[in-house]
Image (cartoon, rainbow over all chains, first blue to last red; front, top):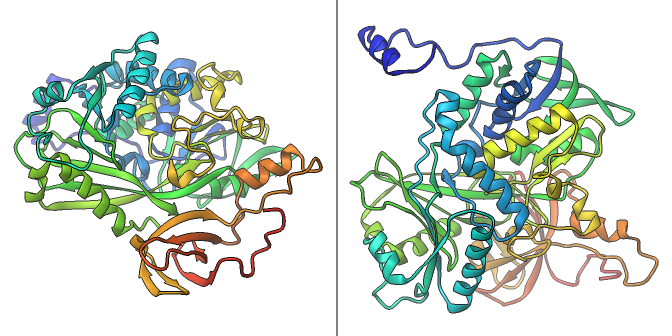
Length: 417
Length: 92
């Protein structure tokens, strides 16, 4: 069924009892051309673009739990492309272009809301860095502005720039095209579109091994049995290092918890997405009125998906410094996800040491914004076996060759990225 | 939340500590170490069945670095030592 005003009206008369389910329930076949391990937004986007751009539909998407239940549904839904390094910027800016028309393309409202993203600088040195970042963005064709504290205040009156604070705001980098996208809708929209094209999506079907011979994957061992394949894509975020180990190689990635928090809903009070940079706290308000907040990683490796209380306290203290009214609100929910953070803090996308296995991992806590671009380019790689220019810098072998993409200039310390 | 039994101060909240990373052993700085050796020691950290050997700095207490053996899956801490105890530090 195509979603439209007419279908809404028709199903309204039927008391909403006849909406077809988004995903058909399928039993996997014995063999597929391509198996995508990981039913998050990246894997589902790849499936969608394989069908749409390349006409390949003999594809299986597997998830060990439910689609979009991992880091896709655990992020703070922010999209932006304010990166200094060319490789990081280009991929995320391509993504921003794709978000704009994604709802129409998928016939599914992903609620892209380009409300603007403001990154706050807290010293003259930091502001200078932001200016060079804004210049780099403008030279590459994106919109970016440097705002004074007064301009920030006029855009976002609830921000507190007046009381004496330990980290005064000296300005901000404003990306008007940045904003929010409803993350669950992205997973469902891509899954619905891929399913309608004939791609099989199987949930609750974890992978426990790979049949490897002569550096090739012949089959994937799942809880529903052995499934043969010509190509495999690993796109499993927090589980990617374990999957790589099952296939017989290591990834230069650490798994670290990242947490997010949601307050009780209130009337509209915050329009833009604000990133407070002394420490880290990023804040936005959902359409329902809840304030969504996130911070840095927990700061040490963990597979436990058990958040650190010290980080909750730290993030909320920083959020309160710029939005003191938050102290009146209660936290309704909070959760954590396992972020896969590589040694240079940037993603690993492309070929693997095995001939017919492809990798998309290491997005850490910065992967959601890149979803459609990763799906688009990964589908191209799987379909043509040619690495698209946008993905070439993200190759796994950069760690050995030294061509690292370290946006923050931190070094091989994933817990600090 | 972690409770880290500091050998100097006793059991303390993780908020008192800074994480200092895995105990990595680097190859000796001489021409015999290959690119592959450096790549392996900088970019890959071994962990046996989720058990890691790492450094923490107790900024809120004794201001000493300590060594912790921790399980990444359930956060169980198996052993804590003052630094420079039983690690093989050859080449570091």
